[in-house]
Length: 79
Image 1 (cartoon, rainbow, N blue to C red):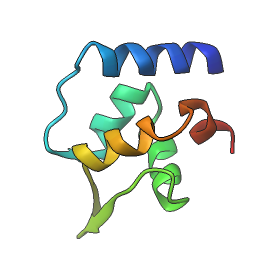
Image 2 (spheres, rainbow, N blue to C red):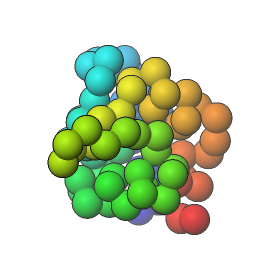
Image 3 (spheres, one colour):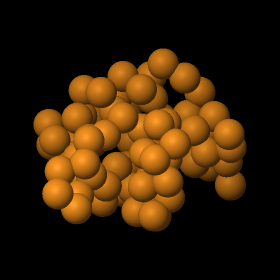
Image 4 (tube, one colour):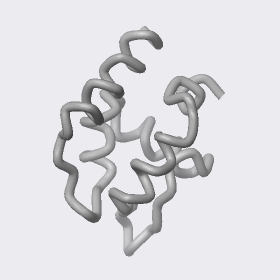
């Protein structure tokens, strides 16, 4: 499972999946092949940088890509 997730993440980023400049949880969940609730948990833990606007979390594409490039993507999932 974990190895497949790391491979899919690398492929997603390397293939240049276009993310909007301001992403929603659903965008990030799709790229990471996770559920939206898992992405929200990662945001609450500070693993994915995001800001809450109203009832929605928004994620800067630049900050998201920087955060995953600075660490092993699996670390996000297993910590």
